[in-house]
Structure formats: C-alpha cells, structure tokens
Amino acid sequence: MRRLLLLLVGLVAMNGCAGIINDHVRDEISRTRYCPRDSISVVARPDLRPSDFDPELTLLRAPDAEVLADPARRAVWEAARRQHEDNQNWRYRVFTASACGRAYLYVCTPMTHTSCIWGEEVTDRTPPIPPPPDT
Image (tube, rainbow, N blue to C red):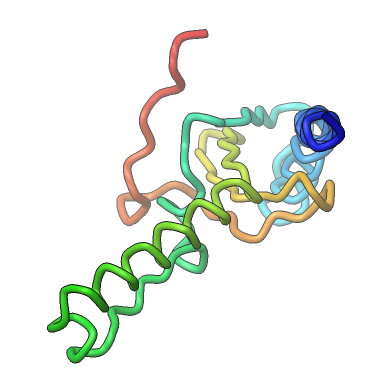
C-alpha cells in the first residue's frame, strides 16, 4: 500500500510540473529566439516517446560483432537496450512549442522542474512528429 501511495504522489507531482516546464520552454525560446513570451504556445505530448527524438536517451551504439553473432548475447543486449529506453521514457517528457511562425521540440524532465535536456527547431532533419491525439 505504501508503494502505491508513493507512486501516486510521484505521478501527481510530475504532472503538476508540466506548467513549470511550459514556462521554462517559453523563457528559453523567448531568450534564444527573441520571440515575445506571450506568443509562444507549449504543449505537453505524453503520446510521444522521448527516446524517439533524443539520441542520448537510447543505446544507439551497436554491440560488437561478436555479440551480434551470438543470438543469446544479442538477446541480452536487446533487453538491456529496451530497459534503458523504458527508463528514459519514464524520466523525460516531450513538449512541442510554436513561436513566431516556427515549431520546436523539447525533451524535459519534470523531476527537476526546469530541466530540458534537449530542444531544437523542427526541421526536415527532425524525426516526424505526429499530430496530438484527439482529447
């Protein structure tokens, strides 16, 4: 029961931090792109996986050829990669922003309230961003 309570408190705290992160993203875009803060729109995107956008959150390095050649070792590596990505996707959240006619994508952690580990303007090099699901 205590674990469930701690989990619920943690989830409420993380969801409550979305507004703080929205403010942080607005401030960052305003400061670096010289866009009026009140014209910046930020949307939390819980439907997107942070590891799909920030390569630092994935284990993209392929294992040695020796590991790839051994099905049992490759299975262990694949499991470790999936576990790492799952952990990172739990720790971080994706936010999209529009400002001054441009689109931005940020990967932030609600655990420190104002820490965005990655953010960039959406370009043709950015992985495709699907529209938000209907709410």
